[in-house]
Length: 397
Image 1 (cartoon, helix red, strand yellow):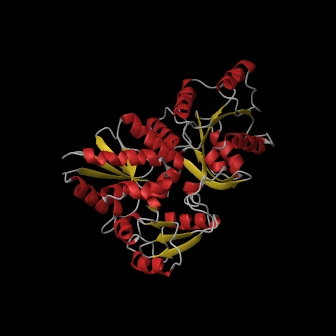
Image 2 (cartoon, one colour):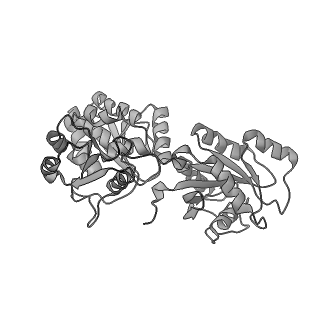
Image 3 (tube, rainbow, N blue to C red):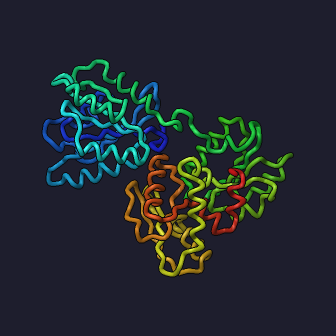
């Protein structure tokens, strides 16, 4: 099975025009992934390439437009480049023998604010060596500086991988558990998976698949049922399960069936912990009580999809919010990697983030925090509106 984009380490190449970002990317992928030209502004949109970068593992490499692009569409290209920062796990600033200036320094400030590890790669050493003074300046910024040439350094890829390994985030090296760390090895977990219009035909949705695999890897016994068979499943077991995990849409029904003595949570809440910050999302859900008539709520989805009848983000959550608050709320939906202006919103509700990486979700949480806008996610806000949030997060406490 192909590794999902959201599970890959995102490595993004930044730098001015014509410093060789695309040439570096092509050397690493051993393909003509990006167009190479001496004409400034050749790279326009972000170019993305997934690959296995051994021994690191699955990565996604992103080549961006030059941050000093002064062409007619340059400002739009630079804007796209800067948006990629929010989903970058490791940043690579490419420069040449001229070193760096304020363009790169402003990027570095963003990396430091977002706690993104970065490498400075000095390209074109075959054309001219960088001066000792400029090299010392780079080392004063970071110990991770690589001087190389995409054209004739035979060891460039090995040197690059060695530096990336030094910068690997802990959660990539030590892959976090989804649910396997919450229950003892050998215990039974019931997974309640409704088969509704949002379930792909012949398949189950991604968070459910990943959770099942995580439990298998953790030596747990997984019992997968629909909500209509949950009572029978509980009756069939000689001992109570250690945990019941449900799709958030069936939360209320499942909570009424599962005894209070049994731990209960949802896939979306598990992913709130895996991909974001569960405590921040719980705190954000509490802002529901403060909503007033006319307040704006933003429902944020990482991926784009066609809305269906009774859609979770466009129909069900808005309905539950209005029922809980009794207020006339203005609810907007936004899909994709970009982050809209949030100044006018009183609450942001993020999806389960199964199709994006943790870096992007954490970046969105930080942006919301800076703007003073509470942020939560689907599973947390659904359980809050249904009055079962304390029970849904008990196992994490």
